[in-house]
Image 1 (cartoon, rainbow, N blue to C red):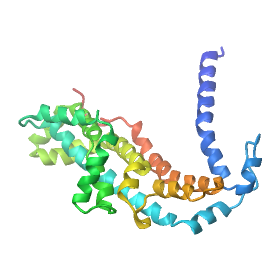
Image 2 (image 1 turned 180 degrees about the vertical axis):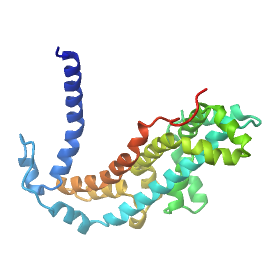
Image 3 (image 1 turned 180 degrees about the horizontal axis):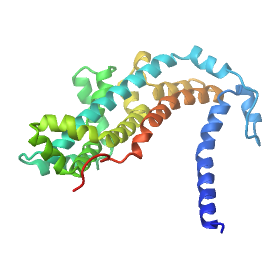
Image 4 (image 1 turned 30 degrees about the horizontal axis):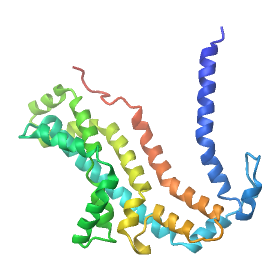
Amino acid sequence: MVNWRKILGYFCLILIAISMLYPFFAMFNLSFVPNGEIYNQGGKIFYSPLTLENYSNVFSKIPIWKYFINSLFVAFVTTLGQVIISALAGYAFARMKFKFRDALFLIILITMLVPPQVNIIPLFFLMRQFHWINTYQALILPGLFGGFGIFMMRQYFLGLPKDLEESAKIDGCNISSTFFKIALPLAIPVIATLSIFTFVTTWNSFMWPLIVTNTESMRTLPVGLAIFKGSFREITLWGDLLACSVICTIPVVGVFLLGKKYFINDILQGGVKE
């Protein structure tokens, strides 16, 4: 007997997937179409003719490699730093007992309710006092600390079976050894999730890099792309902008493809149950 409900469900999922994926395909396809031909592609699914002219224009008109390296470096260091700090703080809030622990964690949660735009002016004056304007320190350090990451790691560590840590203590592990040898390896799925969120957020960041950088050598890719678009007063070269957009998308897609397998892994695979 044909299961029409299941067929309808798959059909709806296919339509949703196409509606989400086709704009990316169109962006990629149009990035190879000459600027003069883009407006003649109406009614087509596959666009032609194809050329590398747009990418050649991008690499010749702006220092896109410098923007790309700046963005990659800032996103990588920020992601690494936030994962380390969030894991350590999250484990401390979940397993260690110290004075004002709950009050301090509540303050961290409250910071998640404050819009990031509110902190821009105080952070800018702080960076200026440290003489860090137009430096990597200004681009990286404000992103190392986040309430969301600490909250996520704490909630995960609270769900770990205490039997694992008690067994480690019987074997002679202190709290640091338990963290690095037991808790941290089991937290790979949530670490991968936090890494992807942090990398994508940092990579796409526009407002803060625009404020704290004032030379071409320190600009990140989103800022460089916006300045490149604004440099044309009379006509917008959509082919060149689409080529820039494709270059901006590649690292984000790569990071997601590397980390997606951890989303479906059992968090406690091989562990014991309460």
